[in-house]
Image (cartoon, rainbow, N blue to C red; front, top):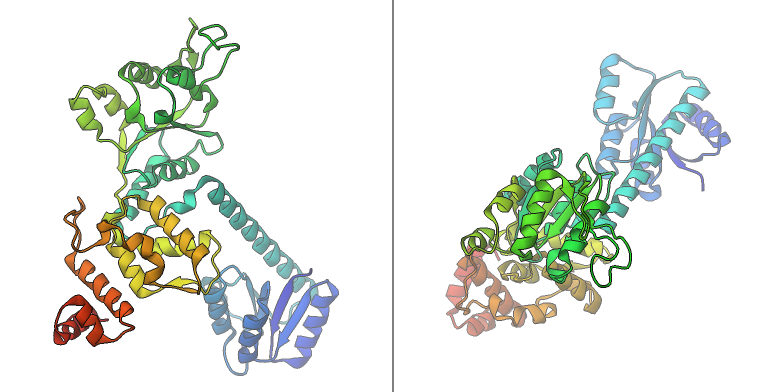
Length: 446
């Protein structure tokens, strides 16, 4: 299927000649004789390229350029004019024009410019698809942030990515520690190498040394051949050690030596092997408490935490919840018309999220699958709101605290929803006078 070019020019004869020349080169051409008609065709046809004159009867071609770049930033625009000047050309390029062509121009000049513009757009499209594919495979698209806390963390992680320093990521389960580790790896000089992820808690204690450093044939029962360890597998890349706090102290000693000396000794071997890797570790435990208890080596802690990154739990960054909901709606390919109602979003904000990002992802996926309509309501979250952690009567208070106003607002919205927006009935459900409810509604802008 040929590329579609939208040609906007109020000069009928020139428009016809230009249309003929472009069509002769295999392009599909849609024409417009005015700016208004051009914008209508742009919205209706979604062309691959826009070619517009500056002097149109009803508006400027530079206004066309601005509108196209606002609504479809990847669509290239070529600007033509018979009244060209350096100032106008600079203005067009600043607004995002691919090229600025002065009339009269020969046929080949315009055609070559169109071909190059479409080639560049094709390259951008392929790059976006590749990035999307990488994000789908690695999960790095899961880093979503609207608040300053996470933005500062991501900024630190971005700067850390350019170094070879070890990184220790701490945070509760489900906060996205591996996602952050992959983001650091992908933005590091080692991005062309592998990233090997190891869950230290999932490997039996008797096998952890062999898994990390490898072994030679016959070194223990079942070692029927030489085996590379994860340190060697991650050569020229990144080794991600998740749940690092679960390692026994004897393995910690060998891990410390491997990091310091940049060499490993496979189980049963007398020879050490050089390794070229970067270490990123993660934990959901308080390692300083484990150090005090004699369960984690202090020297290993400081070796791992050259750059410490702490991911806050979701309950401490409630401002990210709407953005996360939108992200997961897109991730699970929900139709564009599917959305969460304001009362539903308020309850999501009031919830304590013990499962963090993993839990909100599961909630959104479940709501998409089980929904009966495009608007996801409070009642669709019944498995969530029935949990005591979201109840205003719960004696449990999150470590990060919770705004009482958020809880109150959420329950006012729940009461209105249950009462079908009848304020008197909502006041009865909340066991408050109607005038108190009206005051609260005005206070919260409901």
